[in-house]
Amino acid sequence: MRTEDYIADNIIALCKKRDMSKYRLSQLTGISQSSIGKIIAKESLPTMPTVEKICDALGVTMA
Image (cartoon, rainbow, N blue to C red):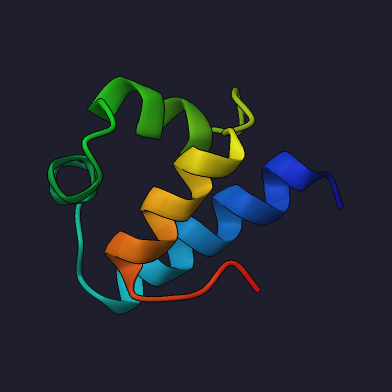
């Protein structure tokens, strides 16, 4: 599995589990909706600081 697929699939699953929209995730992380959309669409590989922000907003660790 590609890294992009793994990250995107986990973000999608965690957002569904927490009933969180891309808009809300964007608000909590300070990352633009378009950037989050590209990550979820597997068009972009996020940087480690971006992954950390997303993990913090979703209440999970990077592990």
